[in-house]
Amino acid sequence: MLKKIIIFIALLSAVTIFAQVLDNHYIQPDDYFISDRPLEGHSWIGIQVAKMIEPPNANTNGEAKFLRVHDGKELWTKNFWQSRIAAENEIKLGAVAIMFDYATGDVYIPPKERDDARTHNWFMAKITDVSTLYKGYVLVSGGYNVRKDNIRVIGAAQNTTVKVAETPVKQAPAEVVKAEVPVVKEVIVKKEAVQDPNLKIVKAMYGDFLEDNSMDVTDILNAKVKDGNLKVTCSDAFLGVNFPTANEKSLQLQYQTKDGKFETVVMQGMSAKLPDKFHRKVK
Image (cartoon, rainbow, N blue to C red; front, side):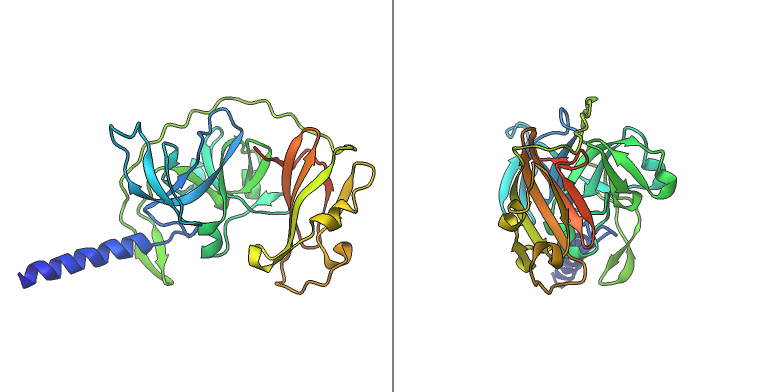
């Protein structure tokens, strides 16, 4: 009996360690990315980190039940994927990729901290141009440049060196989860930065990447809109505020035009024009 108890405790400990293993994107082997929609018919979709709490079966129409990590909400969906960090030979034209949804300048970069990676949005798109891979980034559908170390591909984690409390260990291979993600070719209509009498700032947050250390500057920016155009600069001086915070501030914007709602992130000391053809359209 004692021997069985010892074996059970050992197995339980192994499972716990496996679940806590993090790769270089702070993603665990039993993490899934989920969405309320498939990639098909969209140039990109937003996705979030979640844990599967009920697997799909014949009675759920292919849906599984998940616990979303950032807010603890439980939901059913058939759009779920396991993933791994892409090797360079997996970064190919037409490949479906998963990326952390945060940019420095005009290039999307990998998460720097565990909490950011596990509570903020990621997005899924299709690699459409690898001609700049030698420079360290590629283009994905929707017109976004993504650093190659910010790219994940669909499939189970492989035997790779990972970190648990800064100690390298070997990760056990996870069970492969197959997910068919058909993608249709889309025509991207680029919008020029022109005057738009309907331009309105919907929401603008200035400060840290974390919301609890940010301030709402929506009204400040709306007052600066002139002739249907606005050139914003991410600085206290431009906004007319005194907001001491972390060294790397950002200005996260959502704005409305006659063509729909768009969003962008402007980093400290950088400027952006609204409206702009390179900004992400909110679905």
